[in-house]
Length: 511
Ligand code: NAI
Image (cartoon, rainbow, N blue to C red; front, side, top):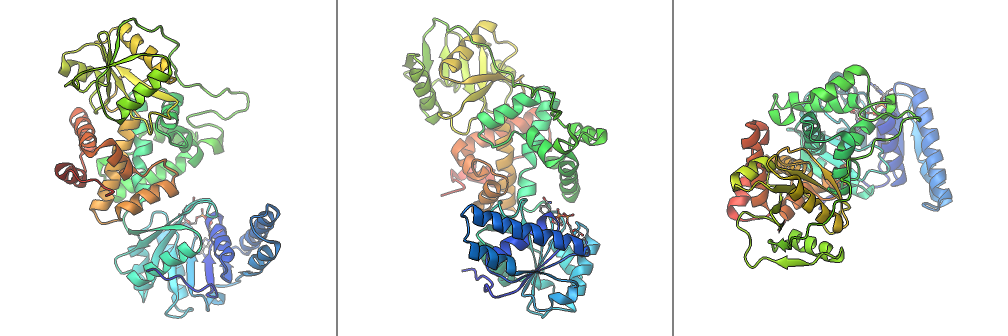
């Protein structure tokens, strides 16, 4: 059981920028007296004004009563010096991202507050162990990593360094819970959970862009409309800002001693070099000038149905969803008496459609000795998808490809063609997200449940990567990763030992 700080306990927030102001707002709304300190008093004054205005707006919208809004506003106070924080029970630091400056603030604070006062840092990338190393009582420090904007984002990563006291981490966890957040426990390792596990979302998209699989608008549309992600990777990087995203990628890459899993992208480096930082500079992958039309994703034009019978070979969930959509679209379907042993989902004449297994369509056509090979990318839920991505083997005839596209169109799907890259877009991205999440669990950074919760609440993923791995099937996931590793010959795609182990035993991540 985790225990929250009592609501009467004073919470101090140091740094009243974007994050500190949000943290102060949430703590005051939860009922704590809150002291806000910043080396720039004008920043504190501005933050307090904004937070009180925010409470007023919430009251106007009926989300809190007038009395509660006034009381929450009154619980906030400016502190004019660190010494004014002497009675705090919890201090949350949200100042500049610099180890020496953070260490100095906590060291100064230690001479002011009681020994029972808990220290929390909102650092997004600095080791909690390092920040704590300079303290007289390093066990009192944990990370309390909020996400931006703090009042809206539910996730809080509670981070333990080597010296952190587990009871203090539990109390900070309980306090975050009492503040209406979804906390997760994590060990102090580079990127913690979210900033580590999310790397492949950007990296795989950048790699397939680099290999010219499709343009950015198409890859974004596929990740959104087939993958179910709220934003495509390129529009998301444009929103975050390439300077920020590239810096996080580089920091994680160097912190893991240049593990090729985290290799940054030259494409993103060039955007930073050019000053094309995304929305904030008016140009990133997309252009944001008012006179520029948004580029449209590639979508195949309507194709004419072939006369050959449509035979469904699989019996799994995907095959069933495909049959249901085809029948709704007026396509009559025959069921193969035996499951085709090269794993095709359906065939129509000589054309065969397969779910990608991490091989290129061209390689699979050669392996199966079947030229008319078309691959389907992963979807979050095929029965709900509005778009799918396909790729075709170099050996595949135009007629066979058109026959499959016509069927998917009859099933009510927009079809985007990717050039033939191994693992396609959604499958490859999800496989690598799951692989990274599995490694965090395998290395004792967090639990399975916390890894999934972190990605759903911290970056709005439509499903936790490990729950997604279970849904894909760990054996299939291992096959996809194994083919990517073999195809690229890069250590980047090595399979997490935990995925290998669970595949071997037939276990799932979520029981
Ligand atoms: P910010 O630049 O908006 O605000 C930082 C504030 O700290 C400024 O008002 C500055 O005057 C004050 N400050 C600097 N040195 C100080 C000191 N020695 N004592 C007292 N105040 C000092 O920065 P932001 O974005 O709020 O970030 C703060 C921390 O939160 C950083 O560690 C950052 O990595 C982390 N973080 C930021 C996120 C974001 O999306 N901006 C997300 C999660 C964590």
